[in-house]
Image (cartoon, rainbow, N blue to C red; front, side, top):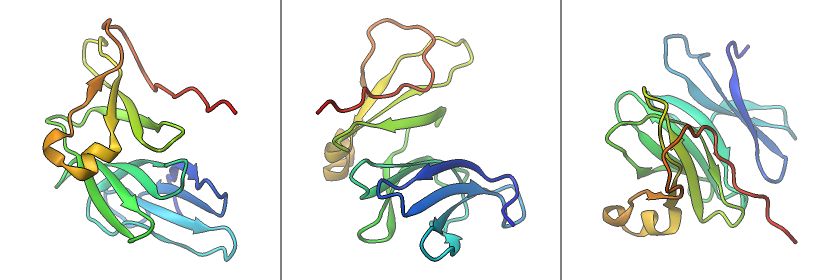
Length: 157
């Protein structure tokens, strides 16, 4: 019943699976939540935007997603308040598959470009939530190149 479902993401506690689907008819894609204990599936974020790439923070508090259309940007859905927060609105939203650091403090991503040359950037989630004016991506790489789908190194015990 959810055609074209893409980008599945497990919650850290493995009790929920989020995914994006165009089930509502039209071109918009919406993030859905599947509760694995009850089997219930429902829209998680009720906005009329195309929502892509849901990614849970390791601590399970936030679901990061990219929204396009009316209000493009990087959003966080706060599981404690059940509402979305605009984290960062770049002038051009041209990224795919951002990733969380193991402590849920940072997000890294690589913008897609027409030339293929780009860098890897990091956003400090704590600073961005405290003050949008200082939410500026910091370059992680110092050499331009072709970067795609960067990932954090897993936390070592």
